[in-house]
Length: 170
Image (tube, rainbow, N blue to C red):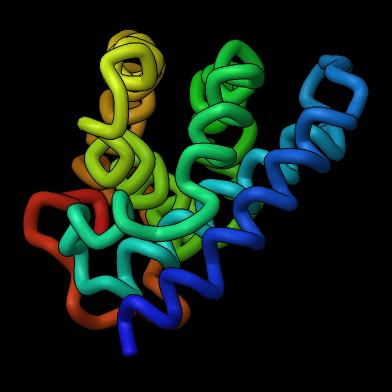
């Protein structure tokens, strides 16, 4: 069942990456542009992949579309890094412009990209290392402050079967 669901989500990720690539990349203050919202949806769908395979990342490597997804991520890595680095400023603030569920899904989706797609090729591992460096560290710093200060609101529908290492849910 999990592998079937994974198979269902990967074509969606591929299409979202195609849409992401097409969108003009503009930054206008705190206004969320379509490229940013599409990037957010990419990471939420990656969360669904992780959940569907019960976080058993090696299952991803055997799926079709993986090489195309890696190629699209590589081609758009700078802008995907921008989504990750801008996300805390756009979504984690006292105004809270989206749900705690969505924010945690995006962070878990980033984890699925980094861990689930590692080992596919040495070149792609370098892309993942670059994504994992500054942007994710800063995202996690903001999440820790958000959790530790009690500013994270209650979850609307916290999923079950989450990994303990995804501390942002707990």
